[in-house]
Image (cartoon, rainbow, N blue to C red):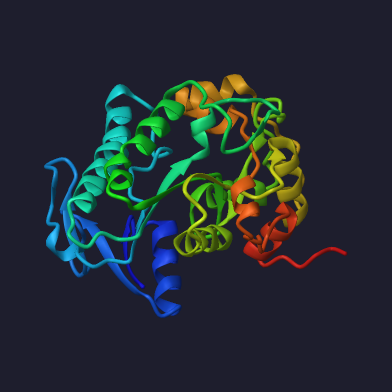
Length: 303
């Protein structure tokens, strides 16, 4: 296939682009106007609302992963606006452009996030569950709605509500490793909040699956079928690393350090069930957390 990928310089996008190229697909990168020298691809400017439609004619598929890092700093009003614009304006610009093409792609796979559901305790969340409250839930609703011009054109649109992506090369796990390796890791708050997670290799597999399975339309929970509490995650990571995990971080400390972002990303609970992936026949390579961590960190099993 001829596949356009946005966000191709990030952790997920770069891994996906490499995988798709290795599978024989032609990958075209959609790059921001301020792309680094030497990067090759089609340029777009979200703030200026510019995207030349001509190079997009005849694509088979689009994977849209672009967006500002939500964990890059405290959520000031300015930071929230930047995060929202990068996702909502970017998705709308891309979708409107695709919708005007003479030869539009058959499928648009868009990133969304488990933040759609908000803080839900131990409630089991399927794709049919209602959206939650708070900045992330509101953002995800607007983000997903921004793809409507593409859907109206007859393009199959898939919204991947992605859980915590695990990779030793970047993201949250890489940031967790230094304190845990030093033996000063511990649960966050009371540790009862659910963490819906997915290994990076599985997420790449989910995206490829969504590209090729016509039964997948609309929201899809992209997370392991076995979410864990923060306490379980902490104990498992400590066990894999062979380190104690006896230094909890109180909720108050999380809020003082990170503000609203800490509440939403570290203390909120989302227990996702990937119902639509299961129904479409997708099989996870790493359904269990310990197996995923041992593979990612190259740690042999103790059994």
